[in-house]
Image 1 (cartoon, rainbow, N blue to C red):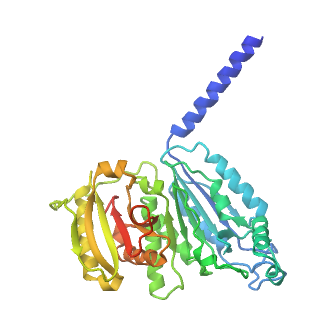
Image 2 (image 1 turned 45 degrees about the vertical axis):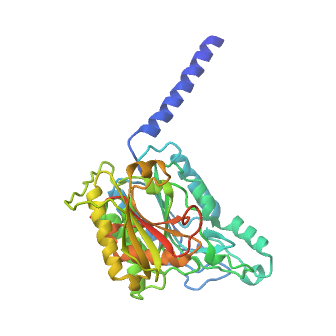
Image 3 (image 1 turned 60 degrees about the vertical axis):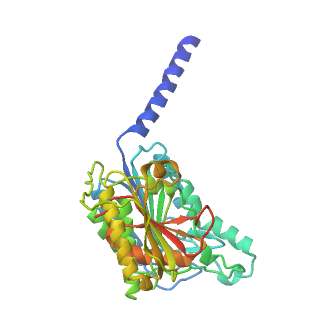
Length: 415
């Protein structure tokens, strides 16, 4: 009897391992979690003015989430969508969704969209659940630690949310946040402008606004995101196009802030990752002769120095030609962009794979210590949308923050 039981337990254990391996090695999946919060006092009607300590209502978050849902479902996503979640409900939905992702196969895409109130405090970013309320006069009188404890216990900490999702380096995790990022209370230390949520290695996170700013209350960001999702293609390219379009609205003074996008290193290493599973991609070919030497295109230090690296390997001709033309056009408009010295140079396959680069997309890297560098790269990326450049935090030269120096990598597909 005991021997039979041991055989059964062994069989069950092996079966569970086999099932886990099957889940991880199966066909890539597309999964999404969408949350919209609008009715903050849960009275079933729109209240434009905040009452009884609750946040004021918003008109469109759940409509926006439904709009994104339609686009994702067309592309084969399994969608979990919720409207008006309270604090505990939000945490439970995130935890449940995270459990679905525990064995998600390589090459999958996970998409998370939140629309509603949000804020930043003490170096942290929060989304606001419905029925969240506080007495601002009272909370302004307590210490920063007590304020932080209150917010952690009553609103949803973005860092905690991200910890519950997949960190598999072979899975693309895309987070789109359409909420405000201002500081709602007095704070002794000016953390708010410096808030920079750690981006997981496999994560691309895009805020509809920059740190410390209010997000427009209409559906502008959601409409742009919906339009670009409808066009399809690589998920990184899609989010780059969203960022570019929002920036153009900003410079035309049609909105007061632009979108902030941050990309993790493992996401940058993911090759073509289309919304639809099995979508093919063609490699562009051109007949441009390749000059593999390092070349200084503009030799003046009257602005931020820019290195443009193009990746050798399959499709290198198109990448070299794009890098060369980009350098020339930027050189002609250097003062307009605030760019100084410009040089282009190749990045060999061996160096890319073994020297810590591991880049397979078009990126622009900046030092988080110098926010003006990020703004410069956003301007460049938006001026050349065909590059689908994604911003990524870097660490200067030799691992040390380096002022007035940025880099661009042309390592993905180009038009």
